[in-house]
Structure formats: structure tokens, C-alpha cells
Image 1 (spheres, helix red, strand yellow):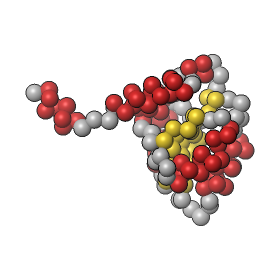
Image 2: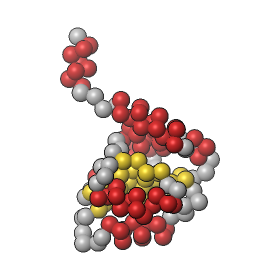
Image 3: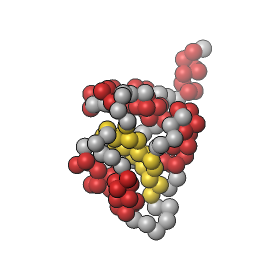
Length: 133
């Protein structure tokens, strides 16, 4: 199995909180985060610093908070041509499932399957309870 880079990028502290939770649940200590707009540093600078320390010969998954949001746009501009997989609108179930993938399993078809599964994890629990009665 080949190492997989994992980056979570969001507005403010969401990326850090998600990474902390993944470190707890999945014991994955090497998650990189971009917590945009928490200080005066431009997001492009933060991304450039991260690019300088990552080995893009390895498969890389980047999770951003909002499709079309400023964080997502900056990631796409800086990282798309590096051959990374950029997934917008993440949830914890999605990232946990991706962590279980081997290098050979990471491709667009498999990632789209996982995204569909993660979407099904978002439910109104009240409705489930009412249907169960």
C-alpha cells in the first residue's frame, strides 16, 4: 500500500476540528489542514506552504467545505493540475470511508461511490424514528 496524502480545508476552524476528530477515531496523525481566514495570511500563501512540504507523487485527497466557496476555488486553482482528487462538501463518514482505501482503490469511480454512500448518511433522525413506529 502506498501512502495517501490527506488535506482538509475550510473556512475558520472546521478543518482543524474535523482533523482532530479523525485523529481520535481513525488514529491518523498526519492529516494536513487549511483553516482559512483565521488570520491575515492569504489562503494562497497557506496552500503554497503546504504544497512545498507534500510529495505529490503520492495520491492526494483534498476535502473542502463548500463547493464553489472561496476555499474550494483557491484549492482548485492551486492543486487541480497537480493531479489531486478534490472533494467538496465533506462529512465525517466520507473521510472515514476514504481512509480505508488502498492506493489501488483510489480512482474517480470509487470516490464517486463513496460520495454517494456518504450522502445517505445525512438523514433527518426524527423521520427515521417516526417511520420505525
